[in-house]
Image 1 (cartoon, one colour):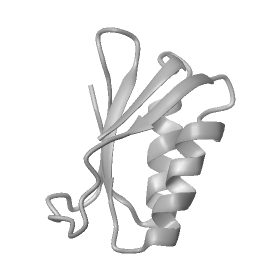
Image 2 (spheres, one colour):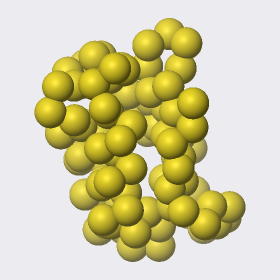
Image 3 (cartoon, helix red, strand yellow):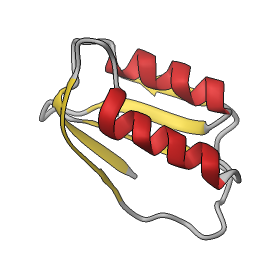
Image 4 (spheres, one colour):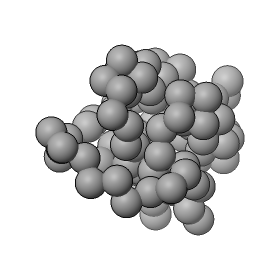
Length: 90
């Protein structure tokens, strides 16, 4: 699971995250939380693509976002591929 805090809602952060995930062929989801943060999950078997995606979430985001922190938890050594695509939730 990923948790991103800062100015990440109302700035197209989820849209740009989906575009980046689709470009890297990463499956999963991203969603807004009530506290103003964004959470999500990404899955791929390609470690280099996942590292690029993590860097995007930590440092890039959307043009108007201001990322204060980005934490990753519960990485799986053998991912259970539950997702067929990358989706934006609520």
